Amino acid sequence: MPAIDDIEIELTIALGSTHLPVREILGMSRGAMIPLDCGQDDPSLIFVNGHMVAKGQILVDEDRMSLEITEVLKRGG
Image 1 (cartoon, rainbow, N blue to C red):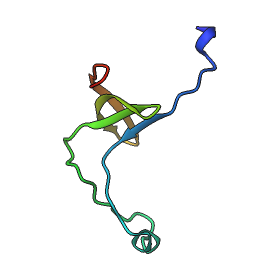
Image 2 (image 1 turned 30 degrees about the vertical axis):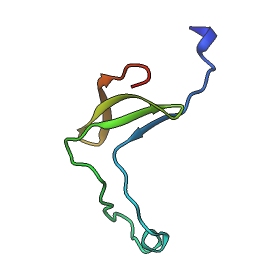
Image 3 (image 1 turned 45 degrees about the vertical axis):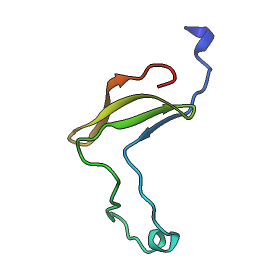
Image 4 (image 1 turned 90 degrees about the vertical axis):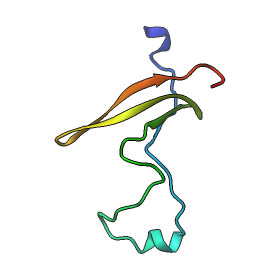
């Protein structure tokens, strides 16, 4: 579809969130674990241009990660 090939969107996949003071982040070493506000089986949230459009599940296969979309939200939802 050449007409839409050059249209850019911002895609964000939110695994979870947390609140940390900057001093704590600066004190972290490589490989540090950051606790999130969700569980392993909770859905990831998918945002396009800042609007949540879907939910999904992160899949891990050896060294590859992917996202399976499990629910597409209705407009305004």
